[in-house]
Amino acid sequence: MLIIGAKGFAKELLEVLHQSNLHNGLAFFDNISNDLSDALYEQFSVIKSFEDARKFFDKNGPSFSLGLGNPKARKMMAEKMKECGGELTTVISPFARIGHFNNQIGKGATIMTGNVLTNDISIGEGVLINLNCTVGHDAVIGNYVELCPGVHVSGKVEIGEFSFIGTGAVILPGLKIGKRCNVGAGAVVNKDVPDDVTVIGIPAKPINK
Image (cartoon, rainbow, N blue to C red):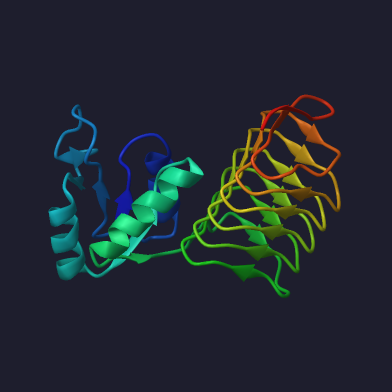
C-alpha cells in the first residue's frame, strides 16, 4: 500500500497499519517536502513523483490510503492517485469499535483508534474520523468530511461533504451541518449550519459565510 503523505497524520496512519499487520510492502508519497530522506524510519520508501507512484502501483498493486488532513487536499490527492492507477482503500483501526448493524462505510474512509460508531451510520468516500471520536445512530457523514480528534457527533446528525469539524467539537442530536462548513475546536453546535459557514463557540455562532 502507498500512504499519501509522509509527515504528521501519515505517521499516525502507519501505526494503525502496523497494528493491523498491514505494514509489509508499505511506502509513502510526498512530492512537496524537501527535507525528507528516501526512507522513513530507515524502513519505508518515500516516493517523490507521480511517475514513481504509477510504477509503485504497477509493481505492488493499486492500494493507497490518504495520510493527510484537510478535506479538499484529501480529495485532490485521491483523484491524482486514481489517475496514476491507484485505488482508494479504507483503513479502520483494530481498536475502533463499530456497530454491527446497517453501517455503510465509503471507499477510502479512515477510522482511527479509539473511535466508537454505533448503528445505522452512513460514512462517505474519503472521510477521516480521527482519534477518539463518537458517532451516534442514524448519522450521515458526507464525502471527504474530516472529524478531528475528540469530536462527538450525536444521533441523526447530517454533515455535508467537505466539512471540517474541529477538535473536541460537539454536534447535538438531529442537526444538519451543510457542505464545506468549518466547526471550530471545542464548539457546541445546537442549531443547523448552512453551507459554507464557519461557526465557533459555546453555543456555536457563525463568524462568516
